[in-house]
Image 1 (tube, rainbow, N blue to C red):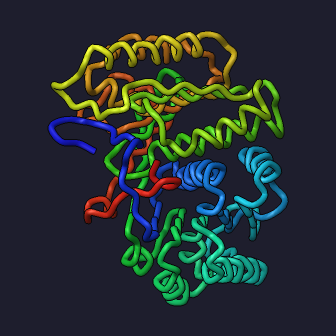
Image 2: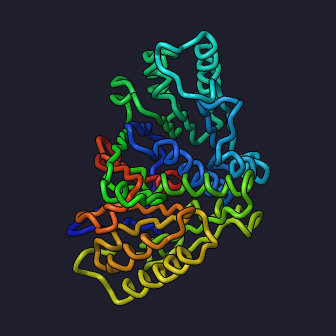
Length: 377
């Protein structure tokens, strides 16, 4: 959110809506499914504290048996600890294919997934239903778009529905209350210098921090299922105080796997506006950066999330040069994920081996609709 600069709306004392919205994440850029996973993490966190208010269905099209996904380990761990909070269903082939390669099996699997989705939507049991990769399923003609749109339009009032994937049909985007498009950017400096493992999410659309949380969930899951040395650090700027629902889910994973995930939040529990920075804002920003810089150089971590670093730099709470130096010197096997909107492109943007800009085509907040705990924060 911004007024005369960039500010991050804090979680404390935030009004909350009761009516669910339809979210659509599409586009050719990376981050769509990750954003959905980030919402899953937040919703589980809410459910840990308020079990009667949150149950999530993660329904994943085009991601059937035969392939392991990094996040599966973390999702299974959360299911074991909180079986009443999350259900997961995977359907379809676990490989990419084009329209000319569609088979009867693909149609049957898509319909199987959609039957589950319809039952879940009409049941009233869920607060959030994630339809991951529904968009390409519709684009491939595996399901009738008109029927899907009709069901989503008539969903229970409280239900939050999230669809992801490239190729969202116009009919779906028309009924969506939120539409974020991820667009990829390519930076020649990163390619020329062989820089890898720097992912940056910018833009005015919703999905940057949730993509980072989804990336963290994937990394934690990889540590659980594949590589016990895959340690994850999440550093979040401009997010002091309480009320962030992902806290409880991350804390639950930390308790079960203390050797796999660390987390730090820094900043005041207040919006920081350009021209109104306080001394504590600089101190908190530097505190987070010193820990992040040491972690990047340590070799202890395989994934480091630097959430809202971009607006922290844009507000001039941190200098850019040390960040550039740290990214250039990081271990090659370390992935660093940086998020946040920025009015001025930071110097380190050119080092991104992956850069998704999230464009805001629709956002319910622009219509005066309140944000929702467990979804937006």
